[in-house]
Image (cartoon, rainbow, N blue to C red; front, top):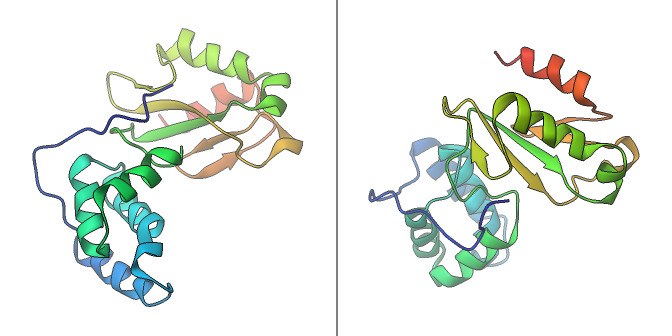
Length: 168
């Protein structure tokens, strides 16, 4: 599991590109206060960059008109926010009881043994990253993986092997 309290600085200023700046301006009109835009703005950062860096925290705070500490609190609270660069295929494995009871750990062990990939890490070629996350909300079809936002249910090691072959 990655350390969710540490942010990584890139050393470069962050700014929304034109597409995400337009989307930010569209969304901000829908919220009762600018501060309620923290989570949507962080989501836009992550869509643009793939992850949320330290500079983006400050940028979002400035755009919204709040303290960077408030944006930081939201970014570090939700496991869906990537606080470090992730692989081309970011794999999230549910770590809660339903998935654990139905074989989640065998899947995590497969990633470790076959890809040398452990939770919180990225493969050397930057192709895959792995993270264990809180409930993905598909308990009736556990174990569940999420890869780049798409859900895969009723998984086992054989299904994971076949799925990963489609990403090569």
